[in-house]
Length: 247
Length: 223
Image 1 (cartoon, chains in turn cyan, brown):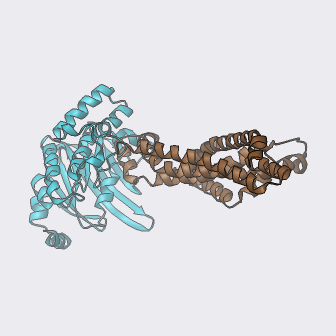
Image 2 (cartoon, chains in turn purple, cyan):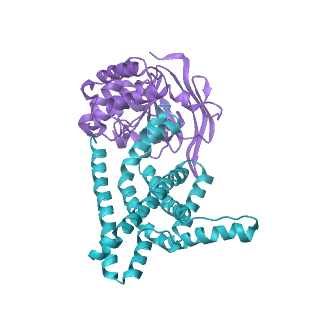
Image 3 (cartoon, rainbow over the protein chains, first blue to last red):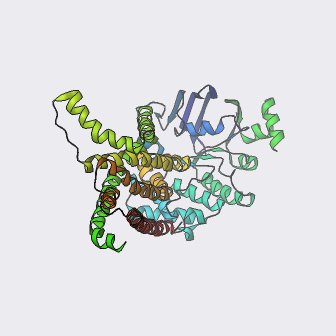
């Protein structure tokens, strides 16, 4: 599934500081087309910040991030255009509370003139059906469970027809019995060949779905490789230590 | 009591009309001022934030009555005498409107700023992550949510502004309190005069706050 010839995201020497705090020290990695990359690590390791740099929700302080051939660190690049191709799913869902579900899904495509209102509605319904929530179209976010909200959030991102999806701890805020339904949607997405970067604490999911796992700590990539390598036979002491604590 | 109502009633009603006119004019411009400074307070621009904050701090730090004297007497004096060459003359209505607009505008700016900032940052981030511009995200996602939380405070501010018009009696605008002073001077019936004026304010403000409650309830449907 992974196309080694096509690099979707190329990160080189990425640095990010908040005031005096150096969160990302020197991150370099490539994400290939169709690849599912899981990022694991202790809290405060910089993994969420790294993910948020990929669509410039955090402004990098150094290095370059080339997405589909464009360096988004460069101020001249229109980041809004780049973001149209990068879907993002947040830990706390962030559905638009003032809009019902169908309007949550159609807002961006219609505002950005990706398609007519009718087409957007059509696609939104299809996406809702795909995440198993067709009957919730006219509900408001406050009427949904956490798992349902997160599935809607995924559908909302997919309505922009992105070719890259970023997930920032998508199941961390969910009740345990709702984690499965969200992971299932993500698995389906991975099986269809979507390029995905996922910050997660779900080691089982990473083992099963990831093509590659990155372990981060202290603003560096400590170890990376296939799930078998990183999760099954870690080499670095810090990785071993972390995995001992979480598994 | 009867005498005041029959003889001075029409006069007091006209004065109440002027009170309402002053309040409406003041509120109208206050909304514009509040919107401008409120938004300047939240956008990502250090200079705008500081200007907005200074405006709010200065207006909040000066009593309304001082502001009224300053605008009505001070500003024309500044142009006509200190700079010279002008013959500026403000009517009491103009000065009163400016005074209320600035005063209420500063409080509105704070309400708007706080309202926008009360919306979870994740709403803006989610909208931006889809490719929407800052302006689109603001208009379609953040402001509609912020306005809902602002409405009760807005209504409160409207009522305060309506009551504040009474302070402008000091610059001679013939609104309700100013007129009532004349009625009192003519009749010596202090108790009756001020009781009637109090009731007049009470009726108007009660109507206003009751209808505001209805609006508030309507807006919260569907949440």
